[in-house]
Length: 465
Image 1 (cartoon, rainbow, N blue to C red):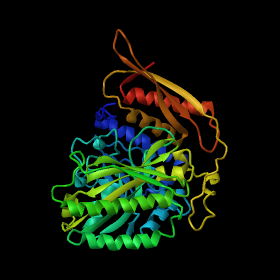
Image 2: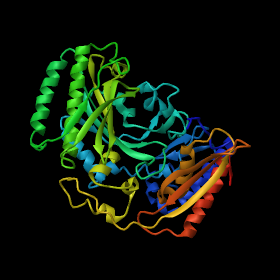
Image 3: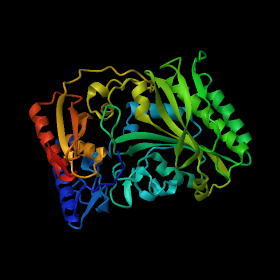
Image 4: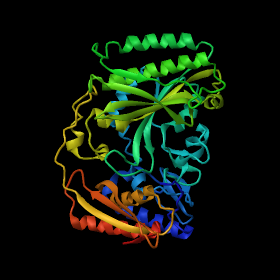
């Protein structure tokens, strides 16, 4: 599908009215109690709220609404959860294990997810027309402020404080499809290490000896893992013109050594015949760049992206005499494999049957999740004609999330039809509603489905069938 920016609301007055309505309904909702943590300047009203001058307040800070605003109450309600900081939570356990692999790094785990567009995109060299900037892909508070889409939003800030090796973890936000492995909020870990370009060989040699000594007893002697890497420096994935090739090669070797040993540490007990492969990739803030994949359940699964840090970032940070690498990985994606967690929504569950499975392991071991009863689904179809070409599936999924929150398990397109005479396009989606901790009723889902139908007709310029 194309990535045309789409505005939910046709006028500022209507836009503000809709947000007032959403925040008002949120205050009366018992299912979003965690939202109370988002404090305001008025103690009597602890929720984000719209004021008469068209602003809303989060954590004591007021933000103006404008036609870029597309963040919803259901998303803002999760800002306070910080799953990666909750002891015994699977994401906390995984974060801790990765940090233990890099004990000589600095750790940053509490950066605010509300950032400027400058930090999230501009400082990292994202082109103005990059699809990640679109309202269909990212959550905006207004034209200048947004919810970070990656932990890389803090990379320049950390480098500017003269840090040379660090890990950043936190919640990141992206508008996405709805299924068992996608959620609009996930947790990412950013890692980076830079070296003095004049002494890189000596610094890397010393660092590798330290890591080998540290991890030799942690990876089993019977290491049957297989690493496939036929990537080469080429015009499609070049080195930066300012970098001497010899120094770049030292940094590349150290990057791949560091990540190969990390992935082996995490996965070797899960699969002693682990297969790893490296493939070329593109990221705006690294060059050359790669993705790392593992072979899992018959297919290759992306684990992380990485590359040589864009020298412009280091120059702006006051570290122009350095060269180094950075990587980013999604904690949920890895945790779902290691813990055998089948549905990404479970990470957000308050159900003790999920949480208690991990609380007795003080040494942060990775243990397998034992499924409890799976409650029956309630399936609803929705069909509509498109009245223009601006339809984007992410906008459609966002409306469903706003109404159903975590009661929606997946959304699938089951029919795409073009009328032979009118040439109008019709779409039919199947929405699978299923709670993770109780049986939903048909009446309950019918009410949600009716709100979904009303919202998509009003906001997406479609005609229901």
